Amino acid sequence: MTLTSEDGRAWNVEADVGQQPADSEGVVAAHGVGSGPTGGGVGHGGVILRRRPVAPVFSRRDILPALSALSLVGLLGLPLGWVWSELAPSMQVRVLSNGTLAPLAMESYHRFDAIAVFVLLGMALGVLTGVACWLLRARRGPLTALAVVGGSALAAWLAMRTGLSFAASAHPLGDQIGAGMTLVRPPALDSAWAMIAQPLGAALAYGLATAWNGEDDLGRRLS
Image (tube, rainbow, N blue to C red):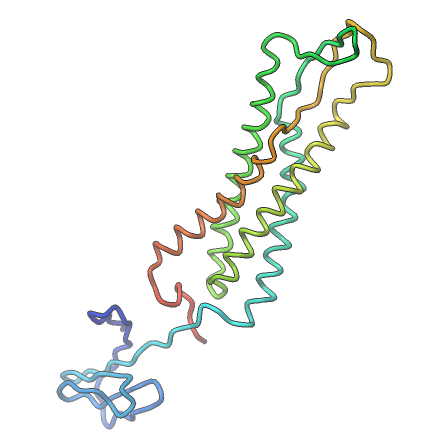
């Protein structure tokens, strides 16, 4: 059984049967209240309190998993770019006499629509990846947080680059363009600030989960 003291520390509770050794984890013979030889445990009224080991939130063993998470999250930008190219609306334009392309009436709003779709998709994917990485209980910590945010930033950049390529291949303008022609222009992203949505969503999801957890080791457990 586990109890929590007033200072928030967790203790494992054992029955007082026979002689209780004072080991490295601070087991103390339980009769009265006092600190054991190691100062790590407290006995009270026939009960032994053993301090539960706390896993460190930073370890060299977390470096390789963090790099793997960064790479995997970054590769999610490829399917994200394809999904955006399928959902973002194209824009009908007319070829002017000087060769420039002018959007038809009400078609210019699709420039905002394309950015909005990219932001929403990126934010949703960022939140999902942040939650997924938080569920890796044994790897919770600052390295994993940096990995998921950095991977999300890489994924957003890949999504923008590949998404524009997918959209251009799906809506080619053609070689024969003359004045007065009406063409379908592929969706475009006029602002690079749209890439900030995905890492922001990942940081918010992981940060809120960390704040809600409230444990010294973020819920990690030593074997």
